[in-house]
Length: 143
Image 1 (tube, helix red, strand yellow):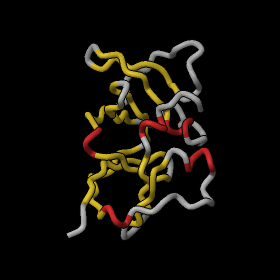
Image 2 (cartoon, helix red, strand yellow):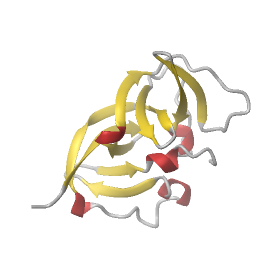
Image 3 (cartoon, helix red, strand yellow):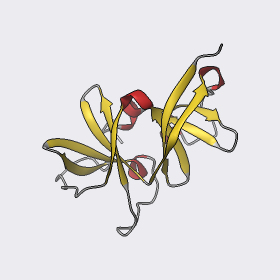
Image 4 (cartoon, helix red, strand yellow):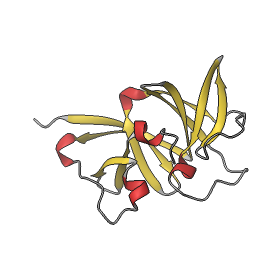
């Protein structure tokens, strides 16, 4: 029997992404974000999560996409990293998806180099592709 892996899925623009379900702490509506002067471009600011101060990483900025309009609704995917909890700002949340580990493929060389380094692989699902976000790489401030 093939090994199965579970992913929490989300959208950044039209890109369907997933992260290991075990590193997801919770999903919350994007709260007020306090800007941080001189912070890297990918850091939208800081969020107060029930007394815990969490950096909010804008995945649209990280992926080199146009920013969402202020009226657009964003969600905050709280993930655990080696440095603590980080908020990933995403456009929409999907479902939990279970896939066979053996079906993982590397991102094709046609994908932009900056984006390719953010994804550890791609799964071909029945109706779309799921890009596996390398969270540790995505939260690095050298963007």
